[in-house]
Image (cartoon, rainbow, N blue to C red):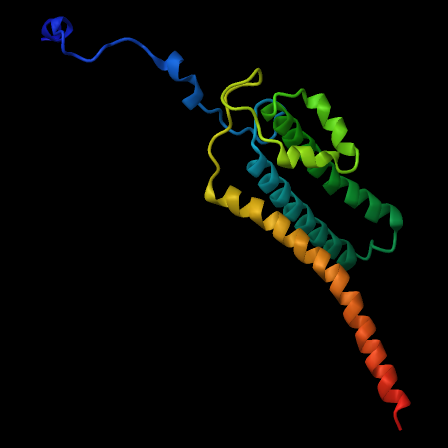
Length: 184
């Protein structure tokens, strides 16, 4: 039977053509690795989610320190802050290196992000299309990645508005209170 299929001139070709469609291949996401690539949206989402985890850990450890009565010692507070900040910073550097790889840059280029406003390159510059010297393109973004990427600028924007509006409102309240006191 297989002899008949191989001699059939109308049969589909049996050649391996995977190398022709290398662009469709993606690489898995590696969270705690400096190897691989992640795109802009995933970089923003992972930055946002890791920051939320860092803040929740800081609050939880702050409550524990407060309940234990160790909070009066500056050394203990600093030590606990360092313990939770180091994994956060390591994770941020690793995803920054992967984002640099997506732009076909060396991970050492991440030092440029220390210059004010230069770090925005990692947010706005698109990654290379298809494979580059750091591997296949990252996988498509999931719903949770898209949500995290959109929540980051929304929360930052709300924070900026609150930082401007709350002091202005407080000034308005103080002026209104002073005006009521002056009135007989």
